[in-house]
Length: 423
Ligand SMILES: *Cc1c(COP(=O)(O)O)cnc(C)c1O
Image (cartoon, rainbow, N blue to C red; front, side, top):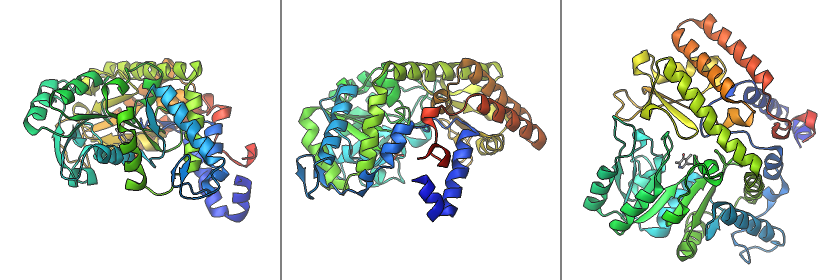
């Protein structure tokens, strides 16, 4: 297919080639990113992209569903087995749509929802003001304790009692600690609220049993499929049987049209991969690598929000280093280390130039890197911080990064399609 692409659209082919080179020749530390397997890539680029299948298996609005029904059922079965859930909806196009569908399954526009504020590590779709979720619902936002960087359950409970939300959302996009979903579930129950947990970032850690699953304590669990779960880009909802019809109706016809069957096919492949001892070992190594990276950064005098990490990500408070997050992220990118600048709790700096940097280990762990390499990456980050205005020092780090990348190539079965491997 790529060979055909080279022939018919050499401009796009060349850009894909450049992006593949960037992905293999850089240390990718954005905690929401990963490398999918060749099998996932093939399923995702398959002929299933050609098929319309509005509705659900056995109840479609178009004919020709002999195969698609089998695929979607297989994806649903793999999801309910992997997450030990009653029901799975595998159609959401992304985590954002999955969240909106979860809210619409349990509440009406104008109802009160309560989630973690974006600048404190929450996701846009947890009711932040610029998101539709903050506009169409009456959104109440809780924060983390700025001193500890952790949830303050007394504050959350007080807010819940005061505002009596219809839904309490747990989960985060920049929270380095294990989340106690059971407590969120108890608080929700105590005020008569539904509990929606969002495990977009940590789904891989949950299926590997490293972090406690929220399934038992949630009315609906929302996730992406492409972060630590290492599948194609997509979203998924898991729920108890009592909510299954509302969830399905909220996704289709509530929010979406035809499901992306090529993505659902690839999600099914990724879930089979995640249901293996190899994946459990992978997920354990993600956390080991994050802890090793965090320890080394602490030795270099970096301040980490919450003092460290329990998961795949680290949030660095850069104020004591006198380097703004954006400036550091851009310098690191020139040194082939790809990160994102991020707000820290109660950030005194503006959101477009915040005081934090967010990094994570899912992608480097897929390349087979271990604690030793994680520590080496901390050395590189420190080197760039110390030489933030010295372009030749930054260039030197970039050369060392390239060497490390060549020692840990993207494994063969994780290779990015190009004309040499014929796909
Ligand atoms: C990434 C993320 C999402 C959104 O996923 P998209 O696929 O980018 O729409 C939702 N919730 C959380 C907590 C996330 O981290």
